[in-house]
Length: 176
Length: 183
Image (cartoon, rainbow over all chains, first blue to last red; front, side, top):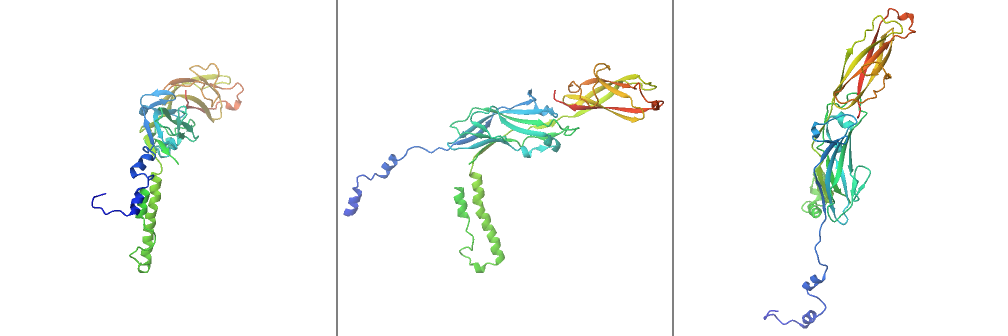
C-alpha cells in the first residue's frame, strides 16, 4: 500500500484478512508440477542388402531376374513409436504406383515382412504390422521387401524389361 | 490451432452484414454460396492433415530388370533318313544352346507332315541310349545359364509299317522348347 493511498473501508480490510486463501504464487506451488511432453514417431534405415534366391547380390542393377526368382531387399529399420496411447502401423506403400514395363509389373508380386517379427510388432496379415507404443526407439529389425517373379510367366512375356522401385516407401503411420 | 484459425476465416452462409439479401442478384448469391462452402470445407481437410503423425523412408530407387531368354539349335550329326526300310533306325544329334538368363530345362515335340510316320524317340545326351524322354516331357536335368547340351533323336520306321508307305516321304519336325526353371 502506497503512503498516499486512501484508507480502505472495513470491508476491504476484512477480505484481505482471510487466512486460508493463498496468494497466486502459493497456489502455483501447490498445484501439479512438471512439463508435458509429446511422444515421437520416427523411422530410420540402416544399410540394405539384396539377395537373389537367397544369394547375396553386390549390385542389384546388374541382376536379370527370370520367372521363379525371388529378389529380396533386407533393410534394417529402427522404429520409434513413443507415446502412451500411440497406435501406429508399419507398412510398405507404393506397390500400386510402381512404374515400368506393364508385363513385368503384372508378373511381379511385392511382399513385406519383418524378421521375426519382434514382440512389439503384430502381423496384421495384410502386409502391415501394428506397432506397440514404447518409451524409447526399438532395436533395429530387418524389414524384408521381396519381389517374386511369377514362375508361370509364359513364352517370352516380360523379358528384357525394367521396373523402377522408387515409389516404394516404408511408412510408419499413426492411426486413431 | 489450425482449426480455430480456419473457423474464424469461414463466414457463415448468408448475406454479409453490409449486404441485404434482396440487393444481391440471384446468380451472384449462388456463386458466393459456393465460395462459402469451399471455405467451410477447409477445417475438414486441415483436420485430416494434422490428425495423425507419419514417417516414411524410401525402400529403394533401383531399377529391377528382367532377363532375356532364347534358344539356338543345330544338328551336330544330321540323320540320313533316305531309303529307310521297316525296322531300321537312324540317329541324329542336336546341340541345344541357351541364350539369355536363368537356369532352364528343355522339352521336345514332334510334328509330321506327309504319309510316312516314323517313330521318334529322344534321348538326353550325345547317344541314343538309356531311357528315352517322352515327347513333351521336361528334361530331367536343369541346365545353367548359357549352357549347351546334346540331344540324340532316333527315327525308326516300324517293322510293321504299311506297304502304302513304300516310296513315300515325310517331313518330321522336332521342336525344342526351353523353359526357365529354378535350379
